[in-house]
Image (tube, one colour):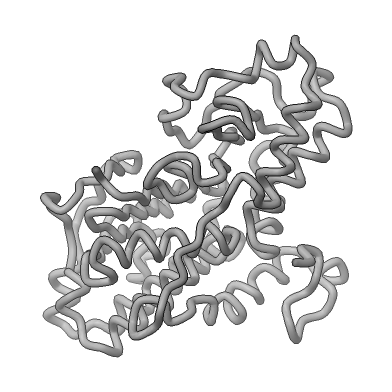
Length: 329
């Protein structure tokens, strides 16, 4: 896939204001991103592998490390930091712009980010990281385990971003574990992820008054409270299984929009996890009155959750989104 290609029908994004371009994509192409994978469609069991493009770049980057670099950023697979999540932290101290890394290594790190995202997702992350910390080079990387040998994982962390790639060696975990995205820009017109809130609120507006009453809750939970609860969990909001067929179709379309920034292999694995654990009917939708940025009843805080799925979006005062998707043993 050519990650530099323009979406169909749009001009070359380099010739456009980047925010305008992303807004246009967010309002058009992404709204048709979801294939009918759960409602009558047949899902293909797919996931990244050690031979996927991001993972092969991870292997090349690892092989390029000096012994001194490995002592600093290469950690055991079972290191405690691999399972921690935070919207603003660095697993390892050196950031990519430091002299600790070579230009070639910085290019490989950027290649990995590009290959774990879609073309639109990569552009959004580039803009978000530029706003929040001067670009991707303000972020840090870490290796857990050895690429190509049993289990391994690569992580990029920093302000409002955690990305992972694991070649599907982390069992039953989409994306290799919880991921985070966000943006320090609070103005909905400038925030690169506000299109997701707009799409999720389309679902809210499609609810009838009684459904909306069940779905709307006064206070949001803690943003990092995203453990997978399994089949015995208790979930806030309205169960998707109680929705009508056209409402369920809109929920599936919305999941596709949320997942559109990521590579197809990871998206396919998410839908495979959902299908294996009950499909759309396992999910609940909650919208929170707290943090209504413009007092317009476009709910800026919302949560999609089920036994194997948590997507918690805190859109006020700016975006912190925590995602955790996987099968509980």
